[in-house]
Length: 143
Image (cartoon, rainbow, N blue to C red; front, side):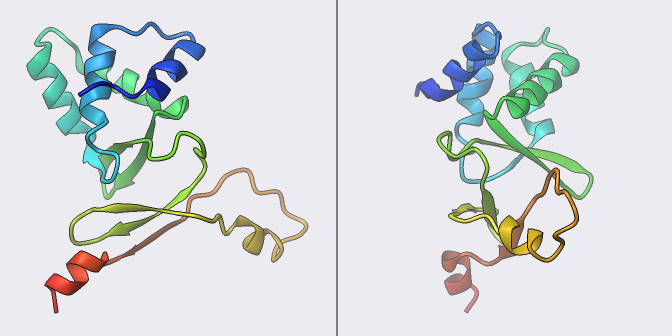
């Protein structure tokens, strides 16, 4: 399995070197394009591959990947989670997340216009929109 070119291109465009460690981290993260994984699991995987690698290096790289749009981060309770970018062409998007299996489905529209019309004198500088429920597969299994 190879790391997708979009991630490597973004790294280079943002002044990051494509090291073996970063390539291996991206390769691992690319398996999680349709579900979130705990950052501690990424840390465990990378430290198993590179025993001398520090926690700070791993977390710093994940933070950098998020800032340049390679991964998406969210908190699940007190756990930091991350997933590989599901749409490099449209990095601003929203998700439906299955509460049972964790599957992530990209939503095609952003509801910001609907809300911004309700508060015309305000300036919105960021937002996050996620829907939660059961995916079709889990819904069928639970019937």
